[in-house]
Structure formats: structure tokens, C-alpha cells
Image (cartoon, rainbow, N blue to C red; front, side, top):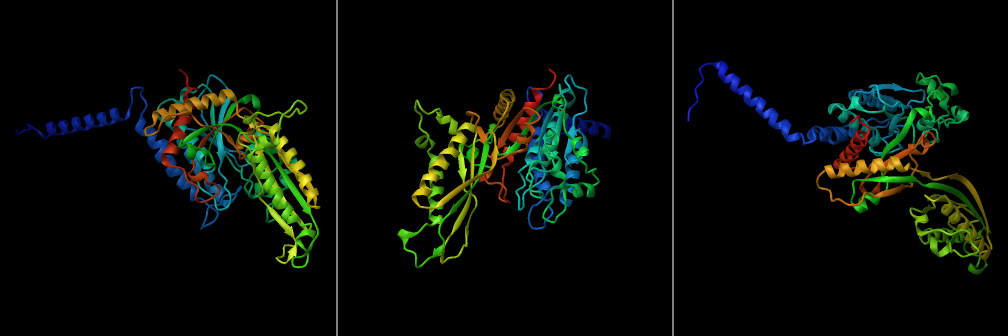
Amino acid sequence: MAFSFSSPNALQSLILSISILLTLITILETVDVGGRNEGILKEILRDEAVHRLHELGKVSDRESYLERTFLSPASIRARDLIKTWMQDAGLKTWVDQMGNIHGRTQAITKFSEAILIGSHYDTVVDAGKYDGALGIISAISALKALKINGKLGKLQRPIEVIAFSDEEGIRFQSTFLGSAAIAGILPRSILQVSDKSGVTLQEVLKENSLEASFESISSSKYDPKSVWGYIEVHIEQGPVLETVDYPIGIVRGIAGQTRLKVTVSGTQGHAGTVPMMLRQDPMVASAELIVTLENICKNPEKFLTCNKEDSRCFRKESFSGLVCTVGELSCWPSASNVIPGQVNFTVDIRAMDDKAKEAIVSEFSKQMSQKCDNRLVNCMVEHKHNAEATHCDKDLTSQLKHAANSAIKEMTNYIQGDMPVLMSGAGHDALAMAKLTKIGMLFVRCKGGISHSPDEFVKQDDVWAAGLALVHFLEQHVEK
């Protein structure tokens, strides 16, 4: 069969018609019955988000590894990059007096209380590229997706993304500088805290053209009445989600934490001349105490019995997520041919149930007293830090769970099951923000549970799942 055209214009018209038809077919293939452009959503929430994570991961103060601390040169470059991405999502941007980056929707809304979504853009030394950054980029991507779908201007309340300037506390050994400023919980003395070079926080703020007064920092504080709630997306930094093979999970709260310093004193002596039966060895006593702590925390029900005369009765659930760690140990004089005279070690105990945590501390102290007496050594415990558990808001968590389930159903290649609900053993910006407003958190699976390491890794589809969950959460706040 042969075709002939009376004029070049007829041929051009046919080519144009075919081009339009192919374009329409492409559009129809990417749009579902609900009008959601799945192809573009995936491109923004996964492909572009992953690219941005890699791009931000290259912004470092070191050539051979990732390090980006509070108001360092790299953090300023990162700030400019994040602002650009926020503006690309249609957000109004500014930087406050503590270096936090803000991006806020500009439409007039039915309600004035804002939903805050955030995480931190500082890092530890020799860091991974997902800790903190994933939460910021996922939030920006979700708002960009709403912008493209024409829903950004239909939100019932303002949405604000905050990239916090400091959470890790590496430079000034003071965590949550950024979120604590927003929550209004920074002490006046914070300006005089200095880094390893002797430079104070106040001086660093001045170097970056910030006002550097306590009054100016206080101006960063939000009025609780202006905030509806706070959401944070963060890598799990643990192995649970990978173990249950689920890309995302809901956080029920951030564990309470108690830190102890234990000092065990014995009799220093010659390693070759003091018989074993006559030794008062604090190292061996410390080893027994550490194993005792492990046994208590692995099997708390064996140690914390409940009877009519004992008011401390705990259900098995009370010890869910209980973890105990000895992270530091030192001895004096620390010589291979000397029985130590003194051993110091730290104890870190975390749990969601504060009373259960206190009971563990009490039981360990009791066991320590008995075992030290048996070994004729002296033991002393100092309480160095105590923080109560922070629980996520039930209603906010319910909305997040519904959104996360919707995201998983929308994605392919995932087996449906119960959405994992986890405890966070690590502190996050949400811990400071809980002093301001109700909080909710979403965890994202990371390979091997590894974090604070260049080996930190999140699958592309898991990045997509996190962004899509935020989209579904925000759509619950769109005018119907």
C-alpha cells in the first residue's frame, strides 16, 4: 500500500498529529484513575531525591571523607543548596539566627497552625550521606510532588520544612543546637561554649553575619500556638526494619536514657608476686559487673520479681527495647605487669518505660554492691545523665501509619503485612521539638543497621517509600 500527499503541509500535519497522539499515550500510561502522575512522582520522590542525597553528600569540609559541622564552610555551601531545592518546591525560604534553614508554603490556608517537617544537615566525622539529609530531602520532594499535582495551594494549613543546623553536637559538644533554638530551650550560657580551637559559639555566629546575642537566638523560638505538630523522617540506624524486610516503620517514641560512671577501686600490685587468692583486683570485679549488667538487661524478669510486698511489678512489655551498654573502660596504671588499682567504666541504659529503666538501674546498683563486697573492692556510682522517654503523639502517629500503609500499597514488589512499630534508641531533633509541640516519626530501613559511617546506605526504593508516605500524609491535610 502506498501513500501520497498533495502538499508538504499535509505531511507535516500528519507528523504533528502522530506526535500529539504519542504524547497523549505517554501521559495516559503514567496517570492512574485517581489522576496521580505516578511516573513523575517516582522521578521526584526517588530518582531526584537520591541524586540530591548524593549531591549533598559531596559537600564536605574534608576531601577524603564526609564531615559537615555547625556553621563550617561546607555547612554554608549545603545551606545554599538546600535553599535552592526548597525554592524549586515552591517554598518561601529564610535562615534564622541559629543557622536553621526554613522553607514554608505561601498559600493562604484555612488554619494558621503549621505542620513542621524537619531533620538536620550537620554530620558526624567520617559520616554517611543519609543521616539527617534523608529527612530534609524527602520532605522537600514531597512538597514538590504536591506542587506538580496542583495540591500545594490547597493545603488546609501551612507546611514548613526546617533543616536544622546542628543535631550531632560535634563542634561544640552540645546536641540539638538548631532544634533547641526553635523549641526555646537553649540556656543563656550556650553562647560561651567553645569548640576545640577555643572559638566560642558567639564568635562563630558573628563570623557568619548573625547577631550572636541571646535575644537574637531567642527570636528563633516558635510560639507553641502557631504549630500543629512536628514530623521527622530518619534512617532507623538499627537492624529491625531490615530483619523484618520492611522499607519503613512507625516510631512510637524515643527511649529514656540513664548514663552512669562506675569506679571500682582495689589494691594495685605486682602481676607476678601477688597470689590469685589474695588479690583485690578491680579489673576482674569490673568484668563480673559488666557481665551482670548484660544478664539483667537480657533477662530482666529473672531479676525483677513481683510479689505482694514489692510495689515494682512490670509486664514483659515494660522492657521492650531495653538496651544496656558499657562503651568506655579505662584503668590505672594501665600496665601489662601491674594489677590495676582502679577501673572506670560507663553504663548507658535506655528504655521506653522510665519506671522499668529506674528499676534496672536500681537492680544493677544492688548487684554491684554485693559483688564488690564479695571481692573486697570498693565501688562507686555517679549518675551523669538522665532523660525521660518521649512518646510520639497517638493521633499524629495514626495519621503517619495510615499514610505509610497507603504508600506501601501503592508501590510494587512489597509484601503486605503489619506496619512495624519501633522504639528509637537514639536521640533525634524530635526529642527537642517535643518541648514545643506533639511529634511523630517515620523510620527508613538502612543496610545492616549501619549509621555514622560511610557504609551507611538506603535503597532507592526505600527513599521512594519515605517520600511517598509523606505525600500521603500531607494529602490528608489538603482541602477536599
